[in-house]
Picture 1 (cartoon, helix red, strand yellow):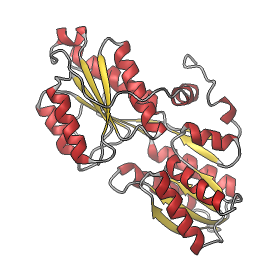
Picture 2 (cartoon, one colour):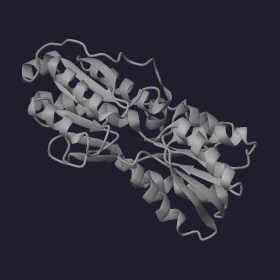
Picture 3 (cartoon, rainbow, N blue to C red):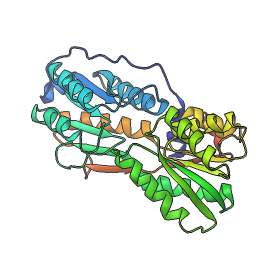
Picture 4 (cartoon, rainbow, N blue to C red):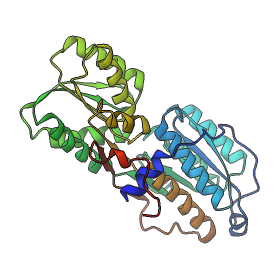
Length: 322
């Protein structure tokens, strides 16, 4: 599994087109067998993680004989709703969606479902079951515990640290933060000096780190809820001449793997994003052809993997066949 996930995320290709396109009429077994349009809506492909997600889903859809496009809502629920409208207008046979908001995206999913289009959610959940055909996400609690354990190892279980948190409306942010706390609270010599929301964003990660570092120069480590924030923190630390500060991330993005390789980042936690993006398409295909997804539950989790100095050299060279 590690080999599959590492290779899948390491191979990042050109961003898919962001506009909708026309398709054949969906919704019947015969039509599904003959193809049709699968609309894929991700957060923001400027982030390599979401780029890989969209690319993997699109490639799998095309391999199965569908047409596919990738659009981005960039965390905006209004834009997300408009993109769902476009998918409906273009007679999509299925929609794969990385939700913009755990609660705010419920209406968009319901709208597509009411239009007879099966929706498969990836990467993030919504706070309602029964309207999407599948919700496929990383095992964020397991991944957070994995990362926090490595953070303890990297810091020797002591020091003053900052936590950078993700977007509050994304359940993953709270799950990862709680996972970190469940491990780090067991080490009294590791003291949390500040928790800052940086909304998964590199610039916010940079700016929040810069501010906290100015107020607390005693900081010796930073744990981030994703790699974008971690990389922003690294930039702020470099500007301040603080390359002694230990930084850990979460996602397994290519730039984070490079930072682990050059020693500027202690580790990252690899989410198997392309594995469950591909699985969402496979389940959509099964549902369109048989009326069943082929899995027992709507909510499905996929375990994460640690990338540190001991295995990062293998990051881009694993075989998908192994």
